[in-house]
Image (tube, rainbow, N blue to C red):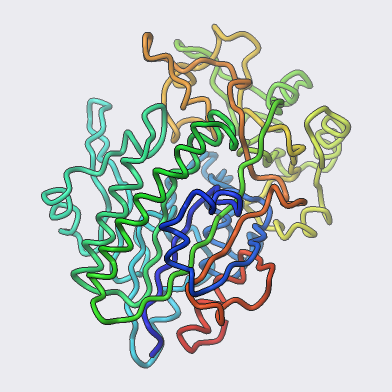
Length: 443
């Protein structure tokens, strides 16, 4: 059987960053690199599903970082377990190899309850009083308690939000090395998100983003040493994939405010402000970085056409997709909206629907990624004096998600064995085939 394979999934990794990452480059100095072309939408959950299934959203069903479950009238951001992916993943398929290779899956989204042999992913416990207790979902179940005893609790507060820093990725890398030392899995998929934070908050070419590159390289260097010890004499193939590239932005659009002004979006008045009513709305937008799904009640064709007309020609909106145009982008799935809005490269989309900040719902000013019906990077800009999130979407200086049309929106794929790279430009879905072929299976 092929030697062990470690796939590092690093959002925001660009070719230009490699000059500041000697330890990462040292892992692949005997190999080669290719340009990685992320598929639209170029955001975490769809790209990770692309790489691990070899299909695009119309095949695996992950159309964004969240879902609107129409049958329940509920929005679910970031939390759905593994069964939301409608296609087998790498670890499901390589287990059919006669040699029964083992797999470990460390922190990619939607990995909870996956069928990999070893799993670790955040799963905080929600207490009756509204507080959260740090915890991770692991396979085997007792593993998190053992990791906690050895490394301390996973620092969830450093994984996302205003306190996000290298400690999150460092814990992921350290715990992965512990697992490798115990089980030496044949396939190890590890998600290291550290480059995501400063690049969005301050801009991808900011001093803070440059510091993040250097800090992550140190973490990778330490992990590489520990992995070499864990796998002892076994050769390890390293495959390092930048999930998507973050580009500078200087503009923001508010699709839900446009829909509200047109009389299509409905809100419910509560004690803490105006809450979105997705079921009672004729149309509303689940925004996600540089795109959004607009869900139209009963898929009404007249309202769908009205929504599309509202956004065509709007500043910051590059494309308005309906019907056959959605099929062209391979997003034709029951979970997609009737209209998809794509930002220009310099713009992103905020979920806000209120017209006055004093009517924003209470959770708008908190780090609350699950209650917000859309992605909110402004959470990284909390005012520490008031412990409150400013409702100023113009603070964001970097984003991603729009189709990768030029070099600045593409990333890099590195390998320690040049023979596994099929071309100089590789689509994210091709990563699946590369891994499958490496294990002697059809890709």
